[in-house]
Length: 369
Image 1 (cartoon, rainbow, N blue to C red):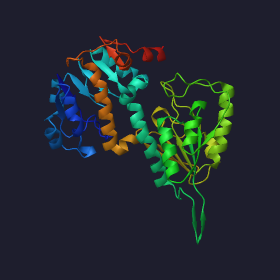
Image 2: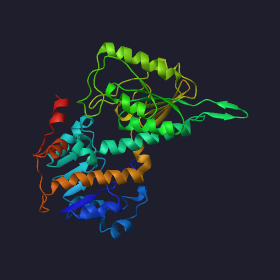
Image 3: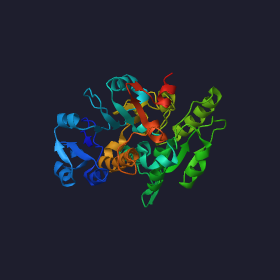
């Protein structure tokens, strides 16, 4: 069986598999073909792929030859009868998913993998969010016009930066750790009271709001809250935001527009020179002014909308992504090394979007009905 690795669109710096991981895929009995230039943005040249045992081919040849295709972003070509692995945001791209299904493709979207203990080594969202949280703080530090840590000098004292982090998921926790290492004073808001201990263990203050809906079954995401809770939440967030120098926002709800947590009235009261890094930009953002892949200056506040910060660290992001894909693909081979789509496996079933000409993913179907 042949596995093909496609070059990503121009905006994407990552690649599905680096040369150092090719051997693992070959050990599964796969023939590997790679589109020429796929790894150039991660400083992996075609020669390195060849030395690792892959064949270099044109894009047309890869698509024509490979039964399995790896492409982080959905390819523009009309694919037919392929098994495809990537990160396709199905709830936000249902028309494209239906098209893939109608063409007889079997599609696995790694952002749909059940977030269970068994799936941790395959969890693309977590591996990439970890990088995004780290890079978000560094991006803010580069744009901010002052120090993060407190300094006491002969010329006077510099107070530490005040950082507010909205959401204590994987990205938020890494952002806390990074901001604290840089010496900032950090406050954290999350609708899940259960994360309080983790937040405090990293040296941050947890901003509590009573009455949150239970988010324990939401797979690590935020959930819809009551109107009363939303009002209390907004009041507490507003108080912290107005005092903050840096805000890192990460709140998203699957299949829905990201909640607005910082509105215009609050930003108008924030300090000139304050920075907001919005990781929810792809689904509308946590501010009313966020634009994905753009920097916006509003009333003296700089809003950096970037939902793919992990792509700014393409080499490590690709390394982790490739290992996630490999760990998942191992599930498709039985003890004798035979390739088999076992839909009795909850991870395979939960990650598969479509097969046999139709959308089959129960979670996607539930969210879209």
